[in-house]
Amino acid sequence: DYFVRKPWIGGNWKSNGSVAANQERVTTLNSIPHEDPPVDVVVFPTFVHIPKVIEQLTVPIEVGAQNCSRTNEGAFTGEISAKMLKEMGVKWILCGHSERRQLFYENDECIAEKVEKVLDCNIVAVICIGETLEERNAGKSIEVCMRQLNAVILKITDWSKIVIAYEPIWAIGTGVVASPEVAEQVHQEIRAFLQTQVSNEVAQKTRLVYGGSVNAANCEDLILKPNIDGFLVGGASLKPEFNSIVTKVR
Ligand code: PGA
Image 1 (cartoon, helix red, strand yellow):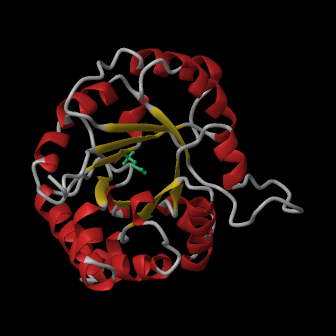
Image 2 (cartoon, rainbow, N blue to C red):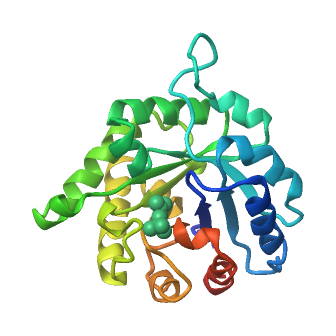
């Protein structure tokens, strides 16, 4: 089928991990049987842990970065560029995670610059969007998501290098997962937006994943929805439970 979207599951380890803890996680990941149907599985360790995790993985799971610089290399103290990450074997980079937006003051413009740098390196940008609880209660969820998408859309030259993660902030790390209906409704709106703003083909082919308190118990109901193509998993990706999520989604 021309428009089949391969499921995508990311494990966002956030600012967690140590050489020993990661080794244990990778050992668990290495026990995931890789069989049909295919699924993309990506883990996102901290920058410093990336090379070791790549070295230790023995199954076809890829490694991504949680962030990158908005600049190319140069006099930008403390920054890590997409090109450096590419050389280290990174295939995916999260752009605009809500923790970056809220705690590190990344605005739409900054995130758009990062998406541009990521695509310049032929790395997949996993663009994270989502509203706060206040915005949801004010009926502004869709408006906020579309504003966040609009800010990056002009930087996107190759849509095969994009995954969009809908991560409502009220669901992240709270244990309050969005219901399959709520998540599906936003994903439908995102797909409709892509259809009108980009093309039908892009709308049908781009993977839209959900994030926010996903676990092994709630992932099955969510993945049944036609516009939910996978998950970005935080807390549960640090546990052996992540293997069950992969198995259940496949
Ligand atoms: P959570 O985090 O699964 O712990 O809610 C998701 C994320 O922030 O990507």
